[in-house]
Image (cartoon, rainbow, N blue to C red):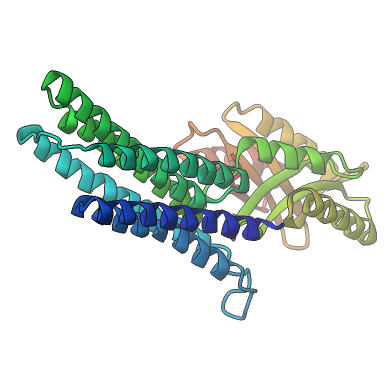
Length: 367
């Protein structure tokens, strides 16, 4: 079963569980003539909305690419996760307002045996359901499922806190309802913002994890002919669509056919291992005894003497265009990049009098 099918199946479990719990509460509420229990049953039906949103978002994300969306519709999943996170936030804010009100106006609970049974059943079902959905969400890397599972867990925690507060009130005539409710509500609001941050960051373009960056660079570096890996950039268009680019250093003695073959090997290896489609750019390392190789050695010596420069790549010397250019990655502590470039040009220009020196300040987008 593929990822999308598993997400939909898990969401269906959430819908079925909430509907069955709602039916149970409704029947008990009608038999016990309890309007509160019947209304709680309606609330359970609204809880199924998170699972419905997840299913709709997942199905829409499976739509194939078209002219307007050449990379597919995978990012729709992030929008469904945002909607669920907003629902959780709304629940947390509503609970907070009610809990603060109870701090100043505590109420005496009026629980019967029937209502206690309903509450205990609801807590158990929500804990099991929330744990299952959230666990599947983490396994499938689905923000929507994680948010939906967290929503169910928070419902269980709020109900458990209410039950505990009621027991304390009945035994010791002291109300914890407002205090516990306020604390839990704040925790839910915090979690809601965290849930919201994950899909929003994906839409904005979050950085690649250091572990994935290092592993991809290691995998590419291991291929024969690769003398350095730079400029790794990845774009996420959903769980099943990731594209990116990187540059590699190769000796300038390699033929176009050899470079083409090496680029193909890189694409195949990374796509098969990570499902990422990479575009490979080429930087040529000057070799042999010629002016380009000699100049490259001298300039690298100058640049490596600067402790504030983390990396140098993309060396290009062209007499035809009367240009010398290269890329540098300065240390993150360097804030005045313009001054650094000006200083480097003053040091390098005497080596290439009359030539245009272009220094590109690059940044590490993959860590």
